[in-house]
Image 1 (cartoon, helix red, strand yellow):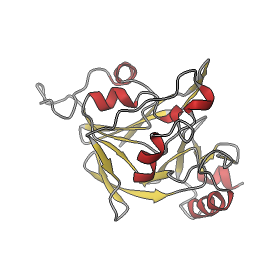
Image 2 (tube, rainbow, N blue to C red; image 1 turned 60 degrees about the horizontal axis):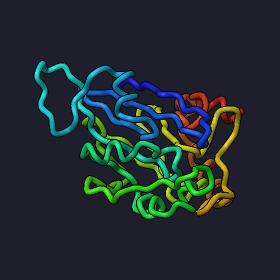
Image 3 (cartoon, one colour; image 1 turned 60 degrees about the vertical axis):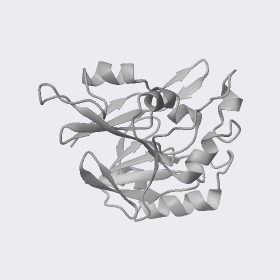
Image 4 (cartoon, helix red, strand yellow; image 1 turned 30 degrees about the horizontal axis):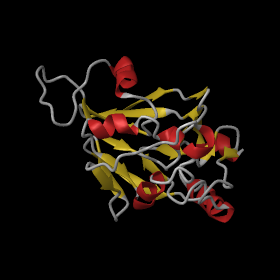
Length: 215
């Protein structure tokens, strides 16, 4: 498995989150579509969409898009993926929250709130908290607190957390719509039970080892 990262940044319209690319078995998945397909091609080179056939046998195929939570800076380019008919996986709560500009927070930071067309390619996370990404089984962890729809995914000591926790012993805000301090505390305690060597990939800032966050 290989992981690539497109760094988030501050813009005049507000923050844009990190986008992560998980590569394995000739496929790749995108975690948090805050960057466009064009920007992903700049990182990976050319690749195929799910409905395209390989011509050389070596092309990467885009498998799925994972959304960790509903905030606009993590889904800035989601329409790009929806229009390309790429499977988008998110929680039912996240789907509902995306329909509200006050909950997805785009009404606070943009001149024009984020508008999302209801995707036909929407897929919910499985009930057994397992998901197949790039032909491998990943664990889906319910991690509310920053929002009520926040999820994390975990495999082989790699943890993608959205805005639940950050480098420098920092953690996500809980004072935004659907946030909850007690739930966030419970979430952090749950994640601290993972192996200390786990590499954490947050929605903003640098990646870090879980052991460093515990110091």
